[in-house]
Length: 429
Image 1 (cartoon, rainbow, N blue to C red):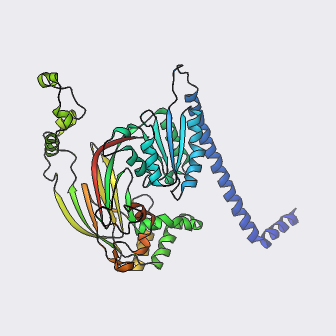
Image 2 (cartoon, rainbow, N blue to C red; image 1 turned 90 degrees about the horizontal axis):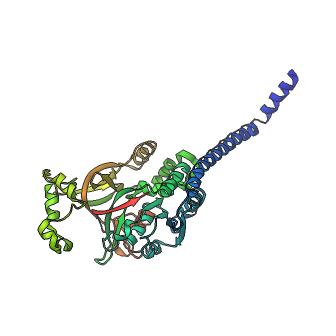
């Protein structure tokens, strides 16, 4: 027996490389299979909930809930997104008895046309399989026509690429769609100007606007998947060694944020609509009924904000810029965040490793200001072909974030970005 144990130990030692390799492979395989089994348990649990909903008794004149699903094929991750949707969400919606209409759009112009032509008045919701940052604005543009929110009463949902590996989150969103659980969320409007006066694009958005060096690295870090959790830091090292992260220059004008005060209410009252002028006969004598916004107006009649409508200007030098719409009480709040430029290439790499290692915060971004309206003038400082100058270096000018932000496909530059809060509210899953 002792001889067999000794021989077994010698065999392991003589083939130690193979033992280490196959041991690691077995550990990885066991972990992978265990993860698949856990995901299947989650799907089975939510499938029972969806099936219970679908088996409920209904009246003979019951009409199934209609849901439009728009797939953005122009998204770089469209194949993975659609696979995750078909695997985790579509079976639950089918089990619940929902009427699914799925359409695929080859580009964002077609996506906007689909949302504009769809009969959304009598549907339970619209689902966008794509990015909240790029795909969602195209659908919102089709729903909010000429600034009017009539067609946007349909409930809105986005299956973003960041959620494709989170099976519980996808299944929970599907159950919210089935049960009709929704919440109000404010949108904001962006106007992006090119070099020409007529070169302008208006979008309504829910997600953030982000562009710069860190965003460029985030777009391409999937190429470094072999490094696992170090992919973002290895990508930052590689691209910062290849290209020096030169800062972007811009001039920012802001209208100070106000959550609501007497001045805002008085200005709103002064701008009477045509409907207010055309009052009925009885309304002139006995008054009108309580309107949805009356309680909110009374709440702020005694509030006075000295900074309401105050404009300030500042010059900024930054590596990245991000604009977010924070759902703050009765009014949305725009937040401008930036990444400070580093002094030297290796300091930039050092800062990137330090900031990207902190997964729990929004680093490396810091909040610079909050506002109701932002006007960002991008300063052209980088040489281009044909004696032209651009606010972006060539490597960033061709990035996905900047390309999709341009007013037109033929636009070469972005000269100005205007971001402002609007009164439109959409219902989201």
